[in-house]
Length: 178
Image (tube, rainbow, N blue to C red; front, top):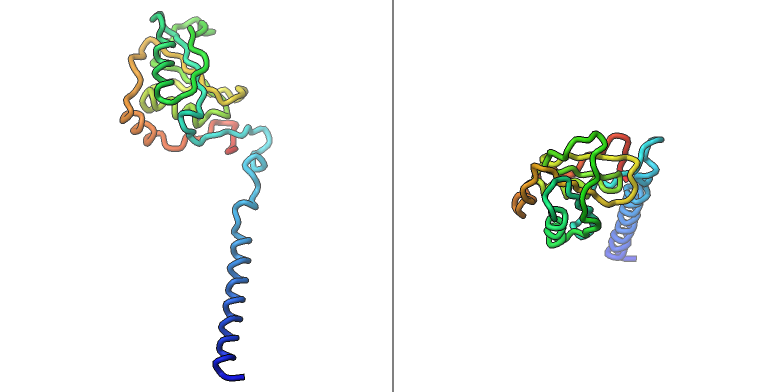
């Protein structure tokens, strides 16, 4: 056997050993083999979805908490033209405490809609809407009750700025990533 053949065999052997090491490292570092989020939740915690979805993935119910006639239908149509799926557009039920809806908007959501609620809140500018999380609420729909201080939805630029300020919505108490 000539020296050049031995050198070629050594080179091929080194390639095989390197390939084996790379395969072993790839399998060892594979993130798909880790436990799912639901398995990593502590007892009593509810899996929540806090990634902001696309607008067409958000089902929105618009409720009028003011005395302005047709407000829910008008704002619901505006949300629809911006790409949201609109469910109900109606008058809000009276509050349990008897007080009027005297804020800009109240956004009510459950664990499946944490990210969706944050996206909707951007249309009322960052931190302007009152957020009401209900851990017992099922479904991924979001309810928006318009209050007496509401004037108009934010512009596209304002929405984008609000989304940048909000970032990834934090998990609510009693929830875990799911």
